[in-house]
Image (cartoon, rainbow over all chains, first blue to last red; front, top):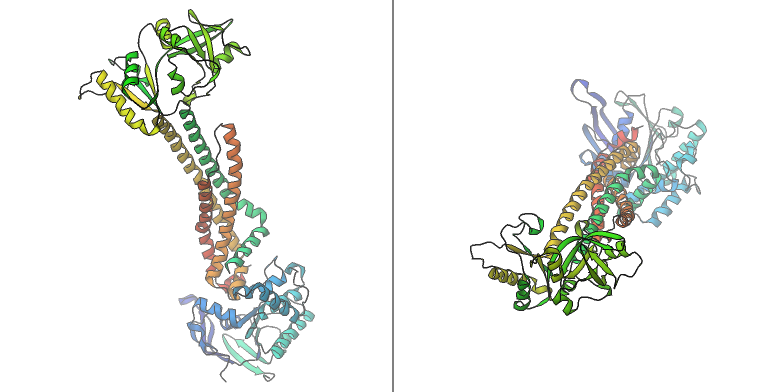
Length: 232
Length: 405
């Protein structure tokens, strides 16, 4: 079975000429279906850039990115948007929910772009909210929810489309330790029971411990790649 | 997708109610100004037409002098001989299809009754005058054949004279002093109101023409002849026959221009309503500038909105919204805003038009065309001025947009 994701010599250069900056320098990486990967590293090590490229939000300056044998680096902006729509789910550090919009509607948003019917959107959003432990909270707006609850809504929004991969950029960055552990438990559950591949950027070693594999970035390349647990 | 974009736009507008209202204010003012101007202008045109048609239906007027030359009315047309009662008889006998032929001679005079006096214009004519001018009797009678023939001093008075000289009294049978002779009032005319140019049509005294010729003007001249055509379709041919007949009677050679002119009330109506229509167009053009300004207001707010909602756009792009879907969302929002402004503007214009048409004393008619046009135009402005901000939103880089504070 071929890998879910394969990066070959991924290089990303920002700026031009003298002022140019090499954020990634020939990264090679393979990620299998069902893995739970924590990407760590100091600021400026290229972990966020790698995450943006993995999330099809950005394209590499050089190298090949194969997602299920599709060359992502050759796709157009709209084709990448469609790829995100159908295979990826995003969770951000700042939650990034739509303000003054109910949790239910926030979760329904990705389904709206998939053109699903109102009834289908409604039931799928309910199910996703139930899965993250927010059953009955659908009518609350983000302002009425705690940080942990907001991040749960964000996770519900990411998984409502049954994505292949969940990309989480510092998902616990704005949360206290107790809530952080709850969120990590939720991600672990989604990975273990639903088989969603999770890619997570974090700078907290405690949180990285939940992952099956920890990749350290230093100066735009992989410094270490440690497997903690096998993919089941 | 289109329907949900529409609902989304409505929710976004509701979320910022005050700002949405201020945004559409420009469009509201623009649309209502254009509609009000056009509606009132059309009302004014209609009023002019009504007034002109109140002069008489299918009416032709033969005046002395060349057309559009010399002082108004052709009174100063040098060398052209005056009309006479023989001309009137000739027209009556030689041209068929006429409802009435009325000679007309007028002279201003002071009329006195008891202690009241009034300066007015006394017109000499025949009973045909009432047919040609669509005059109706409020009370009394018109001239008898004997009175017309003999030029007896009897008269019919207009509503203004009745009001000014007699007030609440019944004037029929009373005597009216005109300059230095007195005449018997035999009838009162139904009010016709103001004619175009503000002339009061009811400020008049009508007498048999021979009486006016003998007592006031002192000659046998007829200053103009009014001809009422029985069938509207004959107007053009009657006009031609009249011209030929008059040329013949005046012995004008083929090389000579007419020294009289035949005018038809429809031409006067067209000339006058043409003027008001030009004014209407001009005012509407000025008002539509404010519509344009309103559109710029929408563009301004939409640009602010895009900046404000950069993060939201970032989220939408990240979860897989296509460029054109984001474009559509903002475009629909702008169009919904502008159309809403159009609708409110139409409502406001309807109220303003009804109110102002009453103040200005012109008829009000709901003009479907201009209302529909204004609505479509305001929606078009939404598209035109919403496109740039929407394009900007759609082109945002999701990574930058998500990082935007």
